[in-house]
Image 1 (tube, one colour):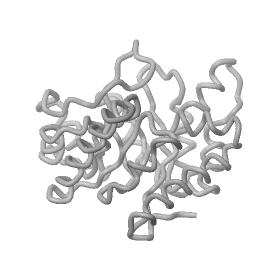
Image 2 (spheres, one colour; image 1 turned 45 degrees about the vertical axis):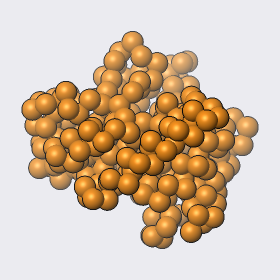
Image 3 (cartoon, helix red, strand yellow; image 1 turned 180 degrees about the horizontal axis):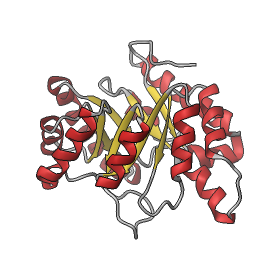
Image 4 (cartoon, helix red, strand yellow; image 1 turned 90 degrees about the vertical axis):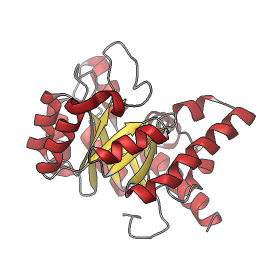
Length: 251
């Protein structure tokens, strides 16, 4: 059930990391993130996102292999820009890789990747992935400088970190939305697709979904949390409905 065929539709990618978090908390084989991914795809998601962290705190190597085998839609592998992770991605061949900053002591990804500071080493890793036929998305702050640097090193997509927007309220949140919108307008000129992710909930997704340049949302923690009350299928349908309603009301 893909919505990507409609030119006005927004792709919904569900991040299933926290299904693995629950599994790993007890060291059991359940709940299975791969089975969760199958449910998400059957319920209206266009793709699945999973972050293989260096410490393997949630998604594991075997999960990545099985996700590649089972997912019929887009499989987006999030990972740090390291030689180990690049080798895993080249061997696994996800539909797209999203390079993210990663620190072992953080609870979740904090801020965007510093593409400018990544220099030649980051460019070389992006080029290795592209040569292997794996498109690259870069998870960055909504910054014009970082956006232009992303285009320059061969990314086909950027994912703007929306955590600051999610943490603000009122006038401050409206200003941050304007900043995101302003940077989004540059992406078409640079030939980049746009995804948004981090801190997105049913309460705040509507305004972001109205931005016409946005092609995709990656939503994880809030959606998995909502699934406790709505069921996993119900949560996916709720976010799918919110995205479609926002985009259709702005058409």
